[in-house]
Image (cartoon, rainbow, N blue to C red; front, top):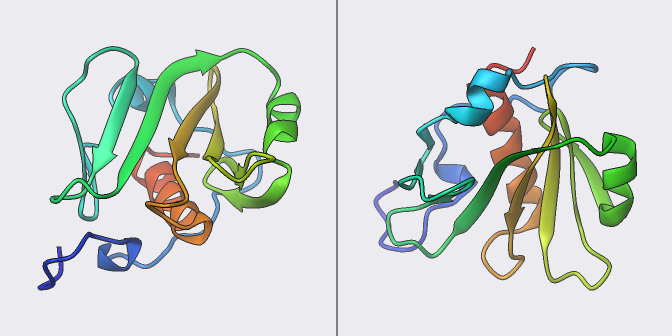
Length: 141
């Protein structure tokens, strides 16, 4: 984390934003069950079921990773995040109709996983950068 005492942000990730993965890229199934332990200042909490949490040192930003692989077609799922839908990682991020949740759907070898956060904690733009790093760290190819 930077020298500030405030919450971490994607600006504290030292590597440049890799941008969305190449068209057709997927996250390997092994990385779904064993996700990256840290992405910049965000570390993965202990496993307590399929939902895993990334948080910064002061836990003011929480990003949920649901490792349950969804079998629904990606194209059907992204209809739920049509608002501000933005390419990110191996899929896209957007907000629900009410704007109360940021959801990112990521294509994997076996289906689709979701990452979620609340807009009060992180902006959609920052969530997109986080997910770009997540996909790169997870070995999307």
